[in-house]
Image (cartoon, rainbow, N blue to C red; front, side, top):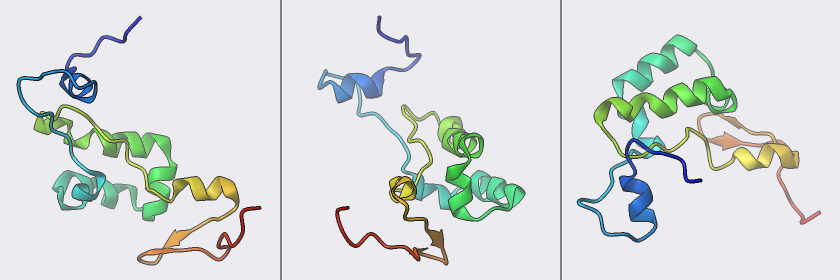
Length: 106
């Protein structure tokens, strides 16, 4: 059974189906120019890495562009997120820094 979407424009485009217009979504990086994102970040008062490690906060941030009438939402995460389960913790100061870099396949 397919999930029912209120707006399936993005999914139709992803399947290669003809659509009435290209779908619109917002990249996470664009959020830093959003006053609502900056306000939430200030209210939460946590380092960037904690924002995407907390599912509730990440979901709130992900949903901020919804008010703009976008067609899809990209979940607020960082490309480095998979490193932590591999034993490579990192922090942003301001860019990503790790004290335990991955140096081999094992």
